[in-house]
Image: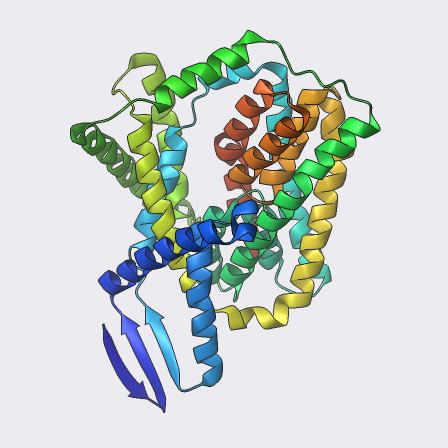
Length: 412
């Protein structure tokens, strides 16, 4: 850590260790506040967002005061981000597709369509409102279906390509999405059930209950230090292979690919090969631990380094885009997805889930579905298998390439 006064501005510069330590403390602060503030807990606001935003607000105050400033060294942010998305890829088993049946295929294809639509719709609205089309993409699938993780990952990529304010727009949109997704999911499901006089009865297919029971058994597994080291080594090797692929694509095709994309797809390929020939026994709890730590710190770093003042000139266009995105998803869910899924109780619960992760994140989706099932006192096992699988993993198979294409198309 160092400090200096230049041009009348007192600047505190934090090196990589100090920045990481501060991020960890802010993450703990976020967890503490979420436990104590009902609003934050109710709408599943992530702890990294809470702690990081508080620091970014402090930076905003210092910016307006004019006499002091903070500088962070976020060199570790990128490796932590890649580690997190690698763990996401490891969870992408195509074997689960066979268990989901027609409903999973319908839901997944709809999610893919939403991802492409949100990007195209956002870019079109941005152009009509006189701002850079990529800012519309940031307020599209990047932040809505992608959530804070994708927002923190793609925002810097867009800014490196010359789109000023992209990261702030992406994070602000993701925060809006979390709140909107949490507010709308339950009411949408209840309206569908009452509007169409849906019989409150879930699927009796044992395939869903057996899968969930198996998942619960796996969640209870313990792991040793050696198991953790093996999983960490696996993640690091996949990250290295992803880095190599990213570099080669840039050299051969002059195509900007975010660092984590290749790693995540290598992880998906490895997982499905491993499912068939058992190269290594995967330890779910160890992988989840790596995911939680890497996501928590990288997202806190992204939030605390936001330059909120860059959002001022974009406030009105951003609000217009987000409101229209919300209306579009609401209409598609109510008048299209519900019908495609069969207009039954499971379909209504899954619609609540889509509003959760289509605007916010998979935890929103799970919370929405849980609230609906608790209200009607009937568990939809089909929804709890299909929605998290599609919303957290399989959607990225189309969502991420779509985002990459749109960003490169509008910045070339």
